[in-house]
View 1 (tube, rainbow, N blue to C red):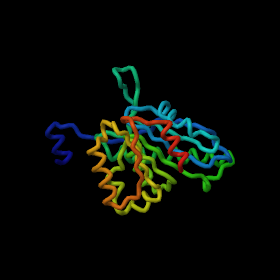
View 2 (view 1 turned 60 degrees about the vertical axis):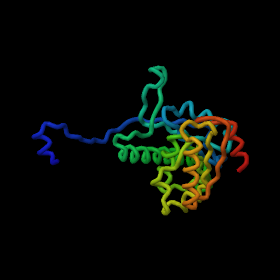
View 3 (view 1 turned 45 degrees about the vertical axis):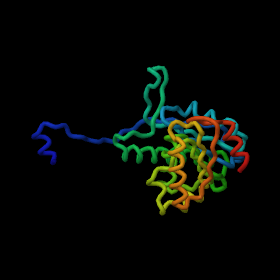
View 4 (view 1 turned 135 degrees about the vertical axis):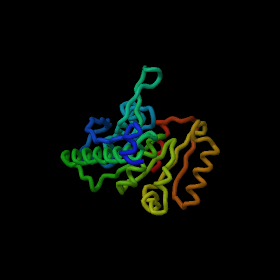
Length: 231
């Protein structure tokens, strides 16, 4: 239906306009000449970066900096007693993806600029991505769409989106050494869902590691620390 036909029928017409807004991110650790590793920690649906980043406290050892961007869409959860944020919904999906991909790249650029100002060398710093739940798809889309090279990709309680595990992406994903960490009692990634997911990855030839743990759809700071110590 053309705009003229819509106008004649009395139906509302959709319009889009780009707006500026203020986003926020949190960090653990101090950028310096001693920085050797920078983590992008991407939270899940209904969470806030301020609280999510606490899971990464054991990794703050003086040589590692954790960066936790917060999703752009905040809302009330738990009957107006708590605020959470979401990276994406089914509404205006493509524009939301493009916007958060650009947002994460802007955060990375700001961090790298600050690193240089404080005597660090971006060329020698390892980038590690860790996403939880909805944060896994968010993080992976960013890394793939922006062709960003990460040392490791930790997918905690989440799945790589199908558009990012096509043959054209295998080399990039395999270089990131994907690690899937899934709770045995995860209410979203049930044993059936998990088996389908891992079978799909194996059929694609994806070189990944899988670690199950006793727990549900949650992050486990102690387990994360043990995993990193084993690298």
